[in-house]
Length: 334
Image 1 (cartoon, rainbow, N blue to C red):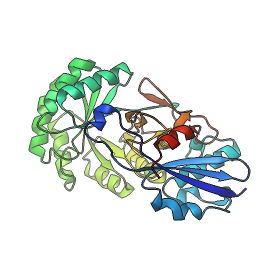
Image 2: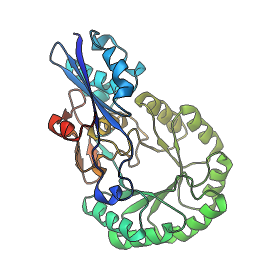
Image 3: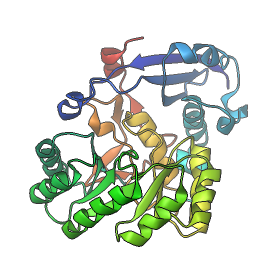
């Protein structure tokens, strides 16, 4: 088998109106479609421009996709190569990562920082759609009011993951806000509440509140440092599939649950890839941050099912999703 063509499509799919009001555009996304002389196709997705990937894409033409080590590649290409391999061998992509431990992967609804009433309206929408957790970009001046209104709008069983991107800054600020938020009973985690250069601050906060602490990390070495410092209850893992697997194993050794963000505000191709990976991670039990539903359209025409706040793990073969080229062309910018 030989790779005959690698197509790259840089697309700009608008965000849903409540988010687009604050972020007309978040980042560039490029879709890859890799085709072979045996009629098999593989797809992938990554953040970045088409131009930055053209030279690498051209280098695959004429090569045997099954002879390449997908895990040594980068960008959208590992996913595309595994998609082809899965179709060639009749296997779903998750089989390349180990034993499947779950059929459904929980996912959070998501909001950028908005006015409290706007966020409450989004919480009501998330609950209506069947989500059970809402990942929220938080700010210290209005997070308490925001959570209060969210609870009123979505009910006491709809939990909130508070992610201030370190903008609570200092432990005494985070501890005060935690004390005010605890009575609502709906805050599921503080993710990166304070500056991340002092792990002792996170350990201190664990002693000051019942709200679990989490760090958003990538490299396994960073996860190991957090485990040694005993400063987190959970960890949010990003990066490549291989990096996520390794980092999750470190956390699992310390009995720390995790969730995964390989794409974030991505499209369905990368979300599907992440779901395959998460299906094989025993301690990835928390709602993930793969959120193609924050876009007004998706380039995936079928295969990735979202129901009641969970992705159903595709059974393949390959990635188990199809590319809707009409949608791709509609939103293509390069």
